[in-house]
Image 1 (cartoon, rainbow, N blue to C red):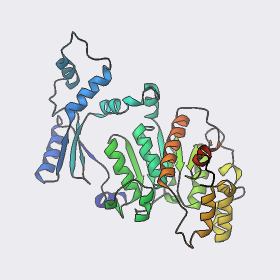
Image 2 (cartoon, helix red, strand yellow):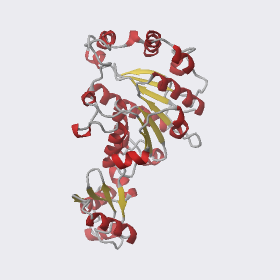
Image 3 (cartoon, rainbow, N blue to C red):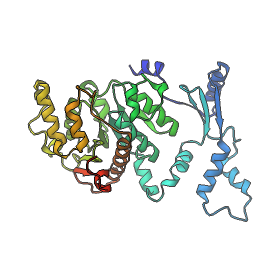
Length: 364
């Protein structure tokens, strides 16, 4: 299925180091087949920025500035230096620094809010995200900060027009799988960040592959709509001692379950007590809604969310979600993910950054 998807919706960039004769020939073949429409070559600018990052106080006045460039190039020409990245969905070729130098420059402004030692530790972390509407904001923010080295993305859904009130992409992506949209956007920010996609969503047949039971995820972000997936993914995370985060994008609530520290703790903080997958499948629509409202603690929802819930499937297609809340959730989730991945003592619980309370307008 992945191969078919890659053919219809390519999402992986191609890499060419033209000092390698084989890769140079492959790149020339793309040119000959007129597969390259746009070329962006700003390698000299990137090399100069690399030098500025390494010498923020300025060059040694006794050293010729050209010597700094020569030291970086190590005998290569600008054309040979770095990597040429081809994005097939854009028919675009971009010339950038090689991976280590690229990451060094791109994360330079993280310092020292994230130290070099912490950044190197985060490079080894693997995070799974289930649900790529709200999850797209989380994935892109994590990619920009480079909060991990591997991102696994799962969602079966394709982009609809109504998603564009909260999902950052363009109308030309209508009908494109949400995992592909996220993977492409991340590749355009950082083509060296490793991305694995699960376009069929998370289901029993691929749980082991997604959670990578031999080398388990370091953290799971669950922001999907499926009640079954919400429940089963937590049972799997609990089994593998993986912490779980969930952003509800209402009242700025983020949910933390530290199964890594306490694998015996009940899922959903005990709010789903006695609920198994088998029992969930036997519940009527009304009983499922009651169980879900207990888990989300309906009495703690915002006033407008409470008034919206009775209108779902009547005057509303689904529950409301705002871009401002989704983006806020992406920022908060990334922040908490980073702290957990770095070993900060973040406790299980539910945390709120409620703008209505902060600015004194509780009717919102």
